[in-house]
Length: 131
Image (cartoon, rainbow, N blue to C red; front, side):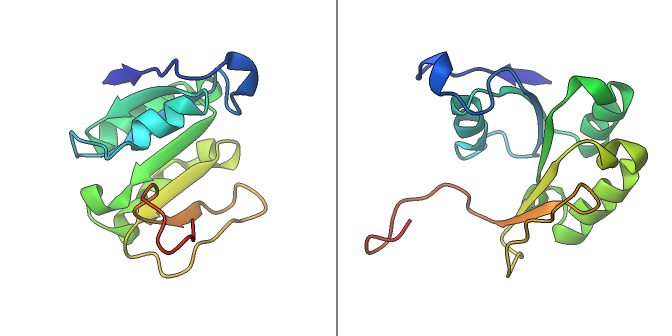
């Protein structure tokens, strides 16, 4: 497990200042996801093993403020949904974001009864003036 911190901004401007975030991805080059999350103020813990990441979060449910799963590296959106359900009661208080190229429609649920689904890649360059 690795921790990622980014000190490129003033702490007063950081949205997620001090929130522990578990990022699960099997990719060693996270494509900037870890750096960008850390840039928002989160303290990123990076796990390259899905079950290690799940076990860590379940073992310390009050210690994390967000869990992000790179579904493309762990077997797809279905594997991400299965991981979400494995969290059990922990998922009721912990926001979970699943990121996948398979995601046709981004979903932002009102509660923690379902994960947020985001289309990959999360961070790219603007095309024709659109974000």
